[in-house]
Structures are given as C-alpha cells and as structure tokens.
Image (cartoon, rainbow, N blue to C red; front, top):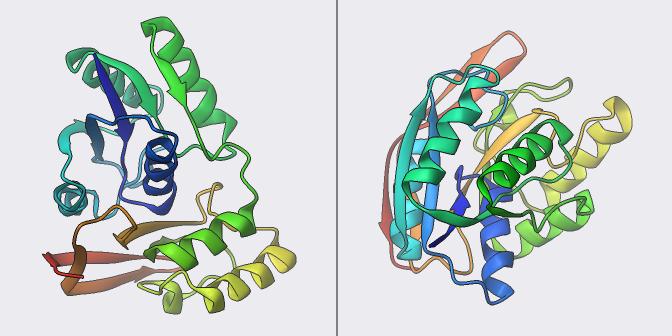
Length: 222
C-alpha cells in the first residue's frame, strides 16, 4: 500500500507534503497531473514538468499522468493513477475550495482511500508568512483584478504579502489564490536536499492575465 501526495509544484501541495511528513507520516509517492488545458478546474497548468526537479531534490518516487483537463473527466484520470499505484492515503494541498475538496473526498471514499488535507481552512496570512519564512516560492501565473505583469516570477516574501493584503482589501481576492487568482512554483523548501535554479524563462501576457514559463532549470547545492 502507498502513501501519496498530489504534487503540483506550487506552495500549497509542497507545504501540505511537509506538514504530513512533520506528523510522522511516511510518504512513498508523488503524483503530478499534467493538464493539457490552461482552464483546468482541478490541477495546475504552468511548469508542472519541472516538478521532476522537486521530486529529485526530495529523493522521492514520482509518477506523471496526463489529463485533458476537462471538467469532471479530469478526476477520473486521477482515480486511475491512484488505483494503479495502490494508494491508501492521499495528501493534497486543498485549502478552501469545496469544489476540489468535495470531489476528492468523494473519490477517495469510493476507493477506500484516506484523504488528508493539512491546510484545510488555514489562515491565509499565516500560510503566506510560513512560505515567506521557510520556502522560496515564486508566482508563475496571475488572472485577477489588480495583478499585473510585475507579479510574474516574483518571490512570495514579506513585500509580496503586503501587496496581496492590499488587493484583498480592495478587490476581495483570496490571498493564497484558492479562487484561481494566481499559481506558484516552489524553488526551495526545508526538505529539499538541493534548490532549483532557473536558467531560462519567459513571460507571456494576454490582456488581464499572464504566465511565467520556466524553459530551463537545474538543481544546485544549497
């Protein structure tokens, strides 16, 4: 039987993995879904292929699974991966989205799998402060009012938390991006044996949304 973590490469799934392991749970597998759709309801889109560097840095086995990213159908793709890998415990970075949590809870229940979401209803600012303090995470996509191209590739640090607080007060955005306002990618974390160095990247901006695309990266010593 396998204990697995659904790893997108972003701050939530990475932090959830750390918290699960901090509880003494032995983790055997990282599952990364590669969505072909930028509009996926369930899974991250940008830079997921580079999670292979995160897995290598963690020294953990990883499996990739493609999904068309179509609403409802994409959950069946995850279910197939769980079955193939004999998963008995699934850790996710779910925080507030009932859409995601309810579907994963129902799927896990039908499969007899325990679902652990260590960040469920976490205080938004508290999470960001923990990320800023212990992790190196950057913003890799934005699609919310008040967010411009300057957010792309920016580190989630104290200054960024201040910017997000202003946007939260002005526009009501979810500060940890649970409403799809943005997505992130973790370059370094406490359990990483090496950190990720980005060698080449580019920004794409279309109207009121954009993406930071990693084109080349490698692991380097801390």
